[in-house]
Image (cartoon, rainbow, N blue to C red; front, side, top):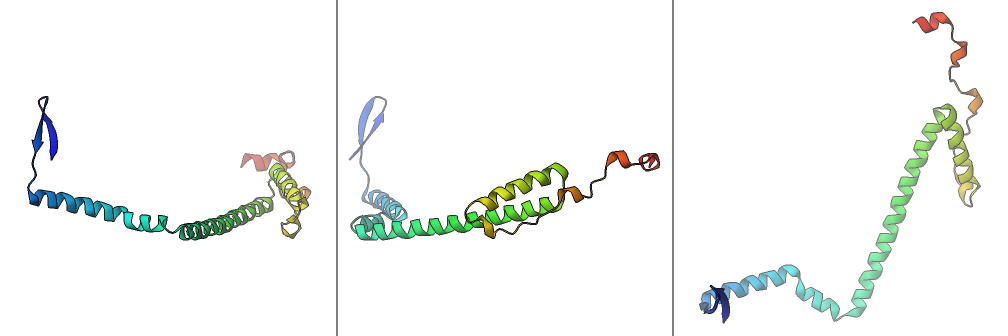
Length: 135
């Protein structure tokens, strides 16, 4: 029996057999959607929980490693492209960063281009003649 408040009075509500059946069916569907049975079964088998957590941890670690490797590889490609552009101050700074990376243990296998900053094709503004500036 369910009680509902109605104007400060609790009145009992009597459901028919059919209404009870539909409410029970709703509860059953809700429990099935929650997969409560599988959860209870898993809780009764702690070895399975440990195994599942181990597999999840391994897959997350492998995914993180692969993802980080790809991101670092893309960053090095971009860094290489920036160095090859021979932008005056940026190239010197990036070459220092590359040298620091190469000096760390395991960094010797990185193949980054060595660019002579002094041979950069940057135009010196003092060498421009007036006819070039007028154009």
